[in-house]
Image (tube, rainbow, N blue to C red; front, side):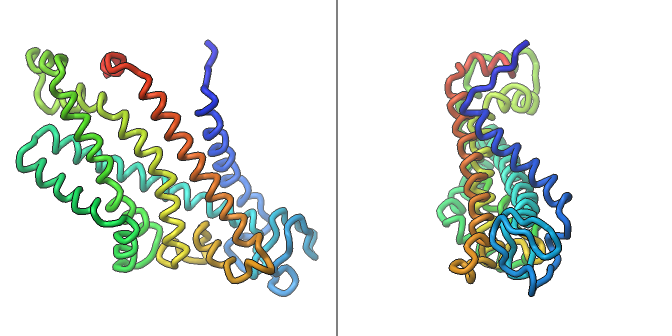
Length: 285
């Protein structure tokens, strides 16, 4: 059987796969630990495509401490990808659970959960991120927790709307007539049909989560040195943007490519799910 992948899905998948492969392989193949200082005098701000005095080739140059930019960018990709994917998945999971619970039970539970979601949605997410990051000690765990706490509301609203529409369909009444319990109807029949928009929102949220994490790290409220992150690498290179623009340019381009690829993948999934008929989705449940 021939596996056919649409071009709009294949291109972002290839970009993300190449980035993940580089994030796994390049730091392990580096001649030195990208987190430790090198020869500050002899290797400081070497331009791209340069070989240092020890014969080590630096394709993207070095920073102010003589550290290889390519190795640090790929090591930072591990942190940014893990935080972005984990933060988006956990936020989506919380949103799916709360949205389904609110729509299925209705009444006071629905008003309470959606009231909290509406109140949080009324506040700009960046403000919430800055407040939460300032309250707790900056770390990778703090960034993930903050992304989850501030990112579940939109998914919850989407899932709630889908569940409210699906629960009135005939196959739900048929399942209840056959003796299925309410929790089983929700988790076995209703929720699988309501996950389409949530999956798209979670995929689109990966790029946003990576961008927000980089913003927090840029401000010193996210991942802390010597652990590299695209945000703190850009912050380290802003003072040398005139004499050594590659220090900030390399992580900035990696951030742009990752966010664009995640967005394109989310758009492709949305278009594909929008082209599927509701009966097809129901048959898959």
